[in-house]
Structure formats: C-alpha cells, structure tokens
Length: 317
Image 1: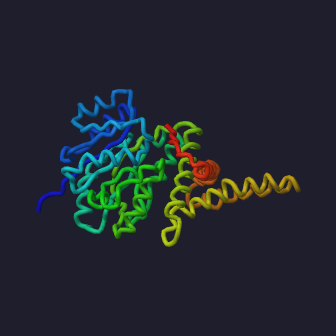
Image 2 (image 1 turned 180 degrees about the horizontal axis):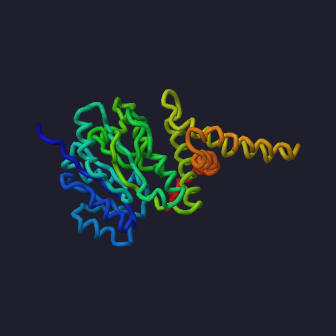
Image 3 (image 1 turned 30 degrees about the vertical axis):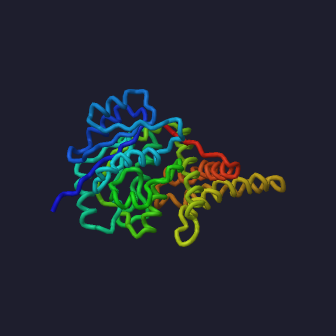
C-alpha cells in the first residue's frame, strides 16, 4: 500500500527566527511546503525560499485573514492534491514524530477529517499570559468538536466543505469543524506532542486584545451556527455578556438607587473562588476577568454588523 502524500501550508508575517525554526522542523517527507506570506518586511520570503518552500504572496490590497491565507496556500495544491495537509502557523514548530503519529491515525480512522495534538508554549515561564496560553492548549484527548490552527487534515474533506471561511477574523478553525462534523466527519485530539508555539505575550494589553478577539469570534460563530442542534459558541457568548456586561452594568445602574448595588460585583471574586479548586487561582482569576474584554468583542461584532462594516483584525502581537 502506497504511503499517503502529505503537504504543509504555513502562514506568517514578520516571524523572523520563528519562521526559520518552523520550516526546519517540517520533516523532509512532507512536500511540498507552501509558505503564505502576508506582507512581511523582515526577510521571511527569502528565508522560506532558501528553505525550499513554495511561496505565495498575498494580495494585501484585499482584507487579510488567517483563514484566507490558509485557503490560498491550499489552492496551490489543487493540481496535485496530497492526501493530507498539515496546517501550521509561522510562530509554531512541529514536534518530532508528530506527522507520523497523525498520519497513522488518519489512515486507521477513515471517518476522521482532522487529527490534532498537544500544542505547547515554548516559553510558558516568560509571563503569566504565556502560561495561560499553555494551559488553554491542553484540551481533552479523544473525539473533539474543534481543532486549532495547527492540525493534520484530510485534503479531500477540507476541499469538500469549502475550506476555511475567509471572512472570519478569528475562530475560523472551530467554524470549519462545525461544517466538517455536519458533513459526517470526525475531529480527534491525540495524546501526542504536536507543536511548540511562541505567543510572545508579555503585556496585559496583549492579553486583553486576545480575549477581545475571542469574544468577537464567539459572537460571529454564534451568529453563523448558533441555532439548534449545533449551538456553536452560544454558551461562550452568553457567559461573556453575563459576566463581562450584565453584572458590571447592573452594579453601575443600581448605584443610582443605592450604593449597596456595588455588592453585585462580589459575584466576580465568588466566581473565582468557585473555579479555583479546578483551575487554580491564577487561571480562575484571568478566566473571570477575561469576560470583560470578551464582552467588548461581542459588542464590537454586533455594532459592526449593524453598521454594515467589515470587521478588521484584532492582533495582539
């Protein structure tokens, strides 16, 4: 039996040494490697060409999204489509042995469209924000509802559902998985090391923007697929609005009647204490506080939609 052919689609902009490491970590049997560049000015294109990658330069006069970049990279494979495609971001590097593990799983599970594994932060000790990312990546092993930006995908399944939604500025991977599952495919998270990621997040403002982007993704995902039975991101959107908008607004408006209304805000520390035994105090605190920027992201999505304006990227790096 002939071994499945595997290609890689790597996206990035001004990733510098991270891109060089990402390219070097792709096994030689994974070919071609397609690098999609979104306007780098740091020599990324030359570095990718030197590494033997096929380079696609995005037309930056059109609105950019990571989803659009991945789709354009995949489109270059149309005339000689591989069996599987490893999608990877330019700030990540594949773990040794991952491709073989994921490939073997997809071969043995023909009903699976996506295999993803454990994404880890390269420098979790650099900041509390990096550590939070590392904990966030540790999702349950087994059949899953969604994957992230790094994953090995069955090329025919990806093409059959139309690839990523190029209009989404965030949350494009879970949205793709909604359509894959609706088409009868399964998503699996394997108990295997997959990638090292470099969030490079050292400031509170970066974390705030990242959480705001999550809120935007929740709202847009719920607008697209929020109806039963999927209810995509509906719970996440409601939590953001409850903890990040309804509670603080109730406390603020209530002070017009009585200063005791501020006691409503005690629900936040109580929520942190409730979550701490399971998540740890630090993560519970940031998860609860993070509902504020998430609520801003939800509001931002709906305000832009009502105004008929296209969403712009929310970048934290």
